[in-house]
Image 1: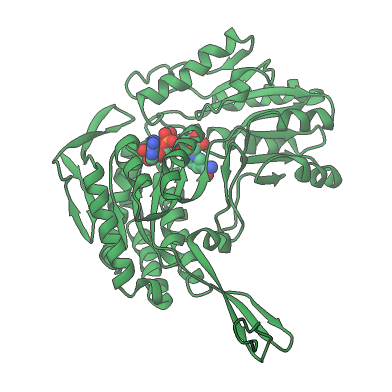
Image 2: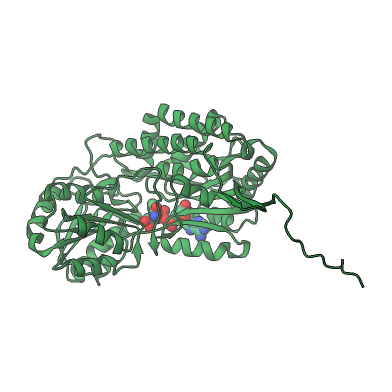
Amino acid sequence: MKRIAHFIDGAFVESADGTTFPALNPATDEVHALVADGKRADVARAVAAAKRAFHEGPWRKDAKLRAKVLRAMADGLERRAEELAAVEVEDTGLPVTQAKGQGARAAQNFAFFAEMATRMTGESFPIEGSFINYSRRRAVGVAGLITPWNTPLMLESWKVAPCLAAGNAAVLKPAEWSPASARVLAEIARDAGVPDGILNVVNGFGETAGASLVAHPDVALISFTGETTTGMEIMRNGAATLKRYSMELGGKSPVLLFADADLERAVDAVVFGVYSLNGERCTAGSRLLVDRAIHDEVVCRLEERVRRIRVGDPTDPKTEVGPLIHRDHWQRVKGYCDLAPREGARIVTGGERPAGLEGGNYLAPTLITGVRNDMRIAQEEIFGPVLTVIPFDTEEEALEIANDVKYGLAAYIWTKDVSRAHRLAGEIEAGLVWVNSQNVRDLRTPFGGVKMSGIGREGGHYSFEFYTETTTVHVATGEHPIPRFGAAPD
Ligand code: NAD
């Protein structure tokens, strides 16, 4: 049986107490590896290594070294792309073609932040005659990076790359349902020359390994991606040690589809946006709000497409939707499908295990119509291959429905009316808006959500606002008045 160890201070190590937990293959539900089960002692060891490497090593003071090493990590990810995709498929059920796409994105993240490492700047504030003030950035220290199980490699790279580029040391805690790719990432880091202790990986469960990281007094930053309720708990648990947080949380993102849109492209984007990555995508356009004038036509087109999505073995390059990550998650998503008719909605297609796929966590892509926005299926994040469709009559109504949800991560607008597109982009409560576009993102742009979808922005130089401290330096360039207490004659 394969083993997935922790990576601490440059070496792969088992848990201090020797315990493990099984990693399951979602396509078969069979155990594919035994994973070191990290607890407080393992986290403490990793944080101590990170702290030492941060203070005693060259990393935080040598941007050129960081750029070189992160570039080598990008190369390593590219070189081992096939192997990484296979590891991710076995561990998460992501269809292999999409796992390869996510792996390529992970490599891009490292290449991008390798360049950014030498581009950190400050501001200067000349003050006529008397002062110059300037700001400078420096690394914060030890960061805790806590990641979810959807697209694990890509999301880990999204945190590790900027965190290290800024000069910090990191302890990464991958999700317990998807530990495998982080082990390869650690090997790539070691081979690329990341100094011992600068990147550590501790596996384990949220309540033990994750919570210990959050509570540790020597961890200054927590970058978290996961469920909103987990984010809340992390903030509560970190309060005693006053952590800085970046929170990338859940979503229930609307797609606003107007009658004047290019329907062919819009339908392509809607189907890809919610059913790709097995529907386990934080920015999934999971609520389709469609102009009533085209509602029936759109539903008809969607039904035809959704029925034909290729569901099956994630190792097959032709597969479009694979199994859900875990049987508990399958139960959760299926629970929402079963709830839909009870709430008065109609399942047009899906909602069941597909015929012929008896093992593993397969669920047919699901299309639900007759949905009202106050239903739970329209309000709660399902995080599976499930699309709910709600008609609207006016732009105002579309906006009202779009915003009438606790989340605010992404929104998608499909219309040829330029004024309307910009008007809505300014009014929709979301951190990310795409107009006539699927989810394509330039790495320089800020990424993050509003409302219950998160706090803060990462991406481009926005990542450095989180991963660095700013010091303002005030220098006198002339003689300015200094009150002379105690200097007055008696
Ligand atoms: P989750 O919140 O259950 O777990 C995420 C991570 O937090 C895991 O590593 C887990 O072990 C850890 N964790 C759990 N409890 C903890 C605790 N008390 N202290 C410290 N760590 C703890 O989320 P998930 O089910 O793995 O992922 C799915 C969620 O992630 C969805 O809600 C999805 O929308 C969200 N997500 C958001 C984004 C974004 O960028 N906004 C991206 C991807 C996923």
